[in-house]
Amino acid sequence: MPKQNTLIDAIQNLIEAIFKALGYSSAKKRTWHQHVVPYKDGWAVHREGNKRITSKHRKQSTAIRKAKALAKRYKADVIIHRESGGIRDRISYKSDSSN
Image 1 (cartoon, one colour):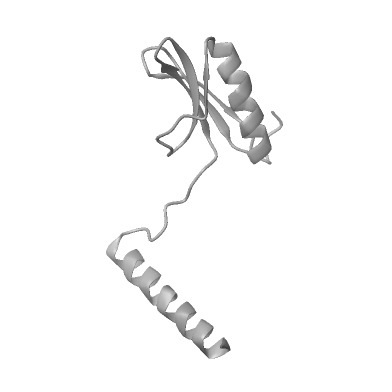
Image 2 (cartoon, rainbow, N blue to C red):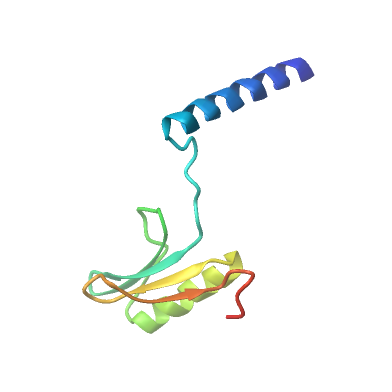
């Protein structure tokens, strides 16, 4: 069994090297950054890269509180958008940050 795992690991490493050489990433790096965005008649929080929203809120301030709680837990950023869609603010909760 250990030989089989070694062979599988070698094949995976080879495939990753080929993708890297071709300029493709074999795996997208997912982040926990939380975006606060306008949504229907209110605001939503969604994780960067997700199509589905995490939560819906009537007020932007409530959505920001939710996004901050998630970002603190996962040492990520909160990206707050304006109603027009542009970025209003970014708050970092990374481990090297004092926020």
